[in-house]
Image (cartoon, rainbow, N blue to C red):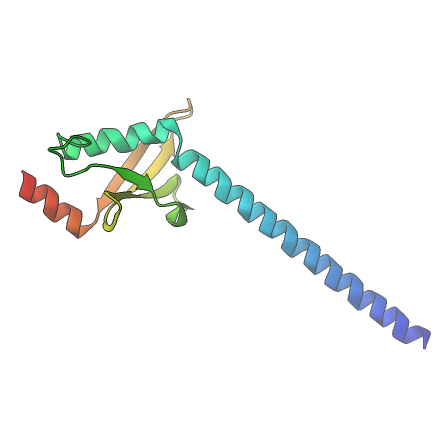
Length: 130
């Protein structure tokens, strides 16, 4: 009988340790996601997006522009294994009009993007406009 109690205690201890580990991992993942959202929606990151958008569409954010608004797609955020944060922005509240950025920290609180990729639908609209 005491042997069964010992085995149960050991099993319960193992289950408790696994649960604590999984809980800690979940908290860590949530913290990282919040950090990514904070970076992607920061004033400095928005400067990168807006500068690029105005470069692609001279009349962006005006009544004559193709690009009227944008928002960060928070569900798309992920770290790039080569460095930086991958961010997708949705234009004019249309999922098919999007641009991907790779935000890199300049070390002074500002950011730059090493590349830009935009959807075929956006590319077509921009080419028609030029």
